[in-house]
Length: 82
Image (cartoon, rainbow, N blue to C red; front, side):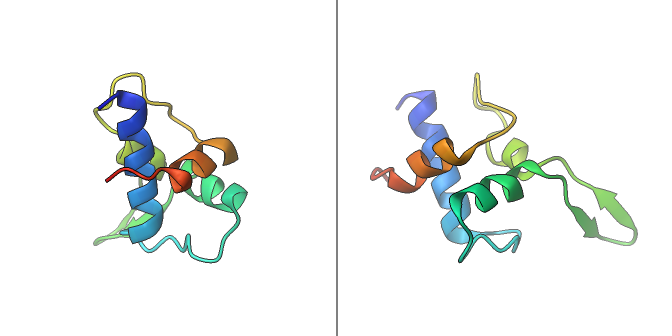
């Protein structure tokens, strides 16, 4: 499987499962891309600023982008593979 295909698969899984509860459901693809690109805070015992979600999703994939746009979200949602 190519790195690009793996990247689309991971983005599609992120949107479908929304493991961090960022609220992808009902959003436009532009809004989804924005949600993936912004940092977010998590309260543990104090507030910690996390990397943009796209960095966490694609960590370890060679040549993965550090930001997504609507086009990449469209491609990921259209990806048919498993």
